[in-house]
Length: 328
Image 1 (cartoon, rainbow, N blue to C red):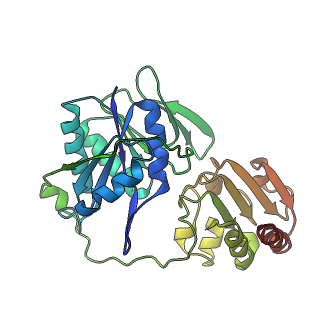
Image 2 (image 1 turned 60 degrees about the horizontal axis):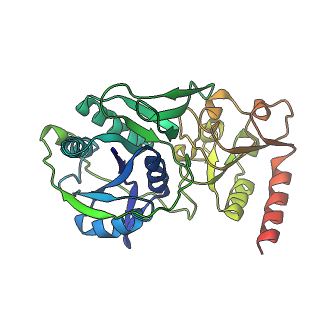
């Protein structure tokens, strides 16, 4: 059986390393394709901690690549490290695929890795399943107008997977830790990070990983309080349409759409958003979509599972009150 490498998506904090949910989702998908193994690029002394987390979701091996020589640079060193790992692992057993979280950094690493290994690349997969000639992926493409099934026909399949593409399923894995030494070329160190600033914590889930997203658009009139209060009641992330961002009501990091972030939550609530194709491209793969809009002819209603024709400033506070009552 081939080995499926899953690159661990994690965050480094003062309390240690936090493995993100997309990692567990990818391990679940990897189990469909072969034997899942995790690849942790981070502090070497945190390898055992990460192994304890991922082995509960079926990781048989955990390759630990010390990130000390990689820190301070952009993604090129990480792609180089993964290339060496893929080539080294392939000498003992076939590597059936490499799964990477479909973030901005993840997609750049995947692209570089595909070139370095001479392999095909599929980005933004929303499902991965076993096929006779290798993994078969499902994608939503061309601004969400088409659903495509595709597979890599050359080399090791490099696949980036959108968050919330699968429900994590616990499975017993050995979690055997193996430290991997890599050599980073000078060419890979051509772009250096000279300064960074942590993002201000909001207490809400990360937008691209949240199971529930509540978004506001032009219809809010810049008053996002009803959107934020409903999001907090549901434990959701807050998003915004391009119109709301262009108006200066929310920063670009909140924007969902073709020129913003792509989300695929279990529940997406669009408040005061007309549903232009640019926005739909960023949220169309959501499992359940609810819209609140005063205009009963808004394009968003063509897409939704449930639609409410009404003023969001009336509907959302009433919904928030009902949610809070049922919670407490």
